[in-house]
Length: 497
View 1 (cartoon, one colour):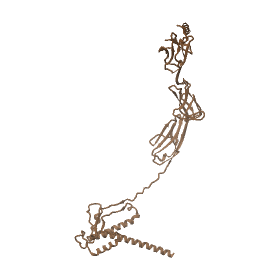
View 2 (cartoon, helix red, strand yellow):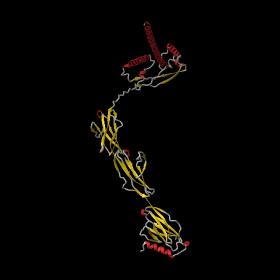
View 3 (cartoon, one colour):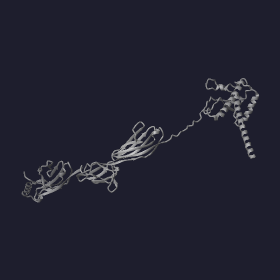
View 4 (cartoon, one colour):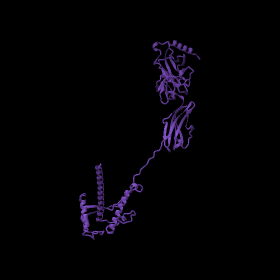
């Protein structure tokens, strides 16, 4: 098999033999275009030649001076390359499964004398790839120290490295400021604190998809710390109460409660709980049905490999206040039906002429009683408007009974007065029964409900109302006399002085 130099010599000899005028020589119909292909794809280089005649076309790799193809023959041993002839003027070089090593200059050559050629560049782009080394792995550091995170990536073109926090938190910059993102292969954090703890993302991108990233965990170790919001908590006996402490520690701490230098064991009345959120822990002790022995000082303790700490909460007794509830007096009202009887004045005073037929209760109709009733009615007419019909409400009785009258000595006077009124009413009723005027009202309105209702007439009710009015008038006169006597005594005492 001929080597590369021999093949080039054959092309030159063919050029010398075939002497053709310049205007009839082959020429390139189009410029050879530069091609950019992602790694792993197929690259296509096209060389267009017009009026080729008996001349030959060859593809060469410029940087290595390697002949790839001559006419329709593949010379190189690279099985990923092939040559095709299209439309009698286009010679197409195809490279399958392009690798980054295929990147470079390629030449399309015509074996004229002098030789004609044109070159094109094949650019192979490579998506970014983060290297395991020297990229940082998860890092553990003590709080207050300095730390540097590293990230290395390859790709074509060269990738750009960007640092971000996974949760979107701010990143402390070397100049003391903070930012959402930081560009650079090295991220340095001075005097790391617990707020800097978390996941950091190294993101590499060069415009060729896909963009890649790597997660670097920064772990900050620090001893426990405790915060207490309420150091004094009050509770009453038999009350349920909760005590709370907030602790921070990493590595994770052991948390428990103590009282009187004794660890509190969970039970029915003492229930300790912990609620974790990252390196933060909420400690809660719930005491059910507080007893007198439960008051005192409690300690919440947090301990890890770097140290331990505790906080104190004092539970004190809140005396219960005694509340006296005063009940309002209970009033019992028993009311019997009300009968509304309407009659004319002529009917009221017509009992003299119809003593037997119009008087169902068989009253003794004497003129003296009629005259006395007429005089009383005339006296009342000064206060009441005249009307042709008088409304008389009969049978409405009620007893007002104070529930405290049976126990309070201050109400004995009211009971005596009430009993005296009842006694006077009974005497009056007995007097009327003897004269066969009015039946027994006390026997009529009883709680057994077995008595039949009574009938009333205008005469008996009018007498009752007049009697009550007389009692009120006499009481008013009696009070007026007492007040007048007191005024005289005061006046005489002042005069003597």
